[in-house]
Amino acid sequence: MDAKFTQQIQDWLNTPAEQRDNAQGALLLLRLTGNQIQYRNLMANPKRNAQFIEYQLQKRLNFRLQKLTHDQVEEMQQQVDVIAKKITPNTGESFKQGKRDDHDQLPDEIQALYVENLGIVQKMRELHMKLRSLSLEKAPCPDSERYPFLKELIALDKRLHSNWETYDHYTGTDGEAVMTADAREESRKAVRLINLAKGRYAKKPSEELKAQILALYGKVINPTDKLAAELKDLGIL
Image (cartoon, rainbow, N blue to C red):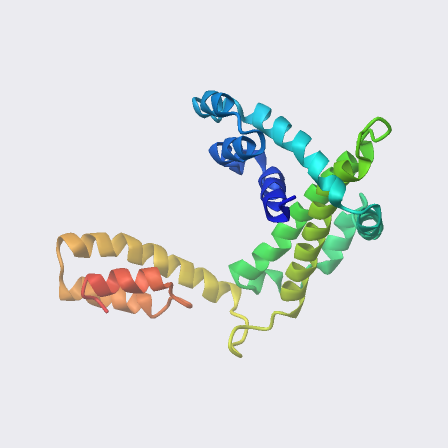
């Protein structure tokens, strides 16, 4: 059995339904069944047939996953049991305690890690509830039923810890001090004004407007490559 192909099916099923490439799912099913007629029918409208594709792939994946040893799945279950203790309904209080005193002064991308972790914990709770509600008594392969949930929970837990590690230990980029909230707001305002002014400059260039844009650019904290390239194209930088 092709383990790489099995992983491709698993990855497709682990992708959120709204982000899946249903045409790719239909092709995976074709490789499993060899049914060209079914494939053509599915490809007539992959989105409409999304649930059928998912059901058929999951059914066949369960059989393929029987290759996983029971011990492997049990080891994953033990990891998840430990993880589950950290995602109780009281987790919200832990998040409040984990929020840095200087949170509002941190760069947007660092603040975003804190917000992302809130969403990750919520998703982990939902997955754990689904895992606990699985009916395994009549399942032909209980381990294969549990595996997708266990795998995703462990992956999310790793992402959670990675985000906390970055958030908790952030002290600035390249030795720079953390920017004050006022400085960051001034930087955002400068970017907004530049975006307005560069359109006017493109239509009617003038030295006065160029000087204004350059002055604003000097207030931007870590300007993006895209903004710099646009100003270079206009001959401002």
